Amino acid sequence: MKDPLLEVKNLKTEIETDEGTLHVVNDISFHVNHRECFGVIGESGCGKSLTAMSIMGYVNYIGAKIVDGEILYEGKDLTKLTKKEWKQYRGKELAMIMQNPQTAFNPLFTVGSQVVETIRLHNKVTKKEAVKEAKKIFEYLRIPVERMNAYPFQLSGGMLQRIAGGVAIAGNPRLIIADEPTTALDATIQLQYLQFLKQIQRDIGASIILISHDIKVIAMMCDRIAVMYAGRIVEEGNVKDLIENPKHPYTKALLSTANLSAKKMDYIEPIKGQPPALYDVSDKCMFAPRCEVCDKRCIKETPPKVENGKGNYAYCWRLEG
Image (cartoon, rainbow, N blue to C red; front, side, top):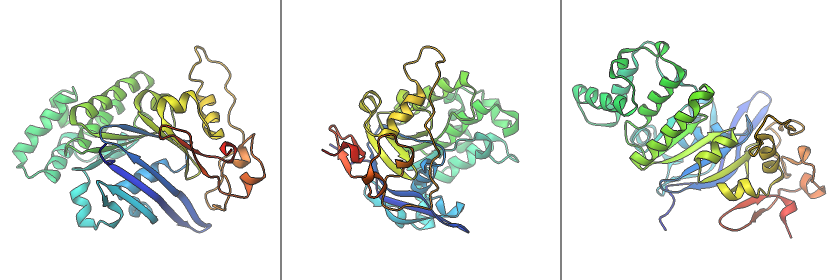
């Protein structure tokens, strides 16, 4: 088998605040294979987006800092890159689709000019050649070419999100991170956009990291899933195995709220309690205060990694023995 395209090892990302240090990404490890769609799911504030920003090298721009770990892209540790070296990777090797398409574009310039600029940034082409390539991208997106002259505020959220996808593939990246890409879209066009992402993956042979709080989106799109809670990965596995036979209590609770098998709007029992503040990272299971099966070990010691076959694993004391 080929080595993974991306391998994250023991990554820790922190934010310093007046109240103390926020451990937003706390010692997580996972890998993404070539041409696969890898899902990251969890509640808001669990560290999903900060994981993506860490991989893309954006954390310094938002007041965060990688304090430990490695992010290996084809064996190259991205955490060691200089600003100049990052320009060779962003766009051409790794690209990111943000969750809010309105913030992905400068409102003062037409969307077409911004696509052209991106193409010129990642390819040694003239402006005329870049415009020709941009037109091809709009045709690929099934958006009328004349819409290149529109400003962001003149386009719908769905169209802007598709153009954001077009910007992401302008440099033919091998890894695309899509951070909650359907959040700002109407329910009627969410499915269309997810099908568009799948088409991108097939056409350019890219891998995708899909970040979402919606288990139904993850289940439809992904090959493997990592479940995050309070800055940590609590379970990872093949999508079918994890959904049909979850091991970690948090994963089970998350799936129960999704009500995947429901054919009508049944009452859904929410997960009791609230996620913890990320200042406290003492040796314990972070889910213990909300867990209905926790015992004394859960509130005193970090749970072990328990393999359960096929590359699936969970961090939970109740799985030991």
